[in-house]
Length: 264
Image (cartoon, rainbow, N blue to C red; front, side, top):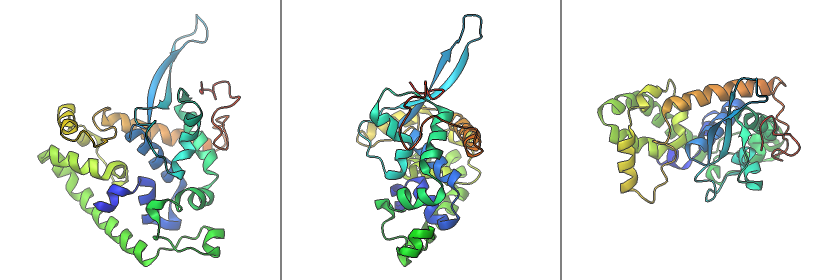
């Protein structure tokens, strides 16, 4: 459990899959984790182009409560950089996903330049010119040992967590707060079960652990995160097919995008 408490979900996923890691999953886990940690949050804005037009609801992403004090890792900056230029920045959900895709620069570049260099992964991957040029990831003995421990723990959680959620919500909450965003790596995650951890229990935990940043548990419903995942998938697929020009490239935020279709 200690390893899962230290690694972001993208780092954990890379450690598990190495060169077989999928870029879409790496970016999605990074994005969802930032929402979970209340570094970013979504907000709905209603807009009406003309008086006779119907009112449309747009889903924007803005800086959240923990943004000012958060120390980002390199792979998280593909989403966070525009907010450091303007904390009041509002970016359409789909455009921020597209921006992250553009800023990642492809799987090899994202892994090589932003992810494998994370201090959390130090000593887990072999270094060398061949590995650098071809982004061929090979685990060290330390990395292999960590990988096996994580596989066992995830398999255990996938088997036991559903029952714990039903039998002991307090224990389930403590587990979720320990593994944080790595919850998204669990297969067949049932958000209906996660919703059983109610707000009252969460608030009680916060009162007892005032110095513990609990992330976003308790501040949004789990079905919301389920919809986030669906929205990310459709936005990413559009960007990957060339239909998601965010108007924002090279971590440059939203300059000259007239709102990026949604930066303001």
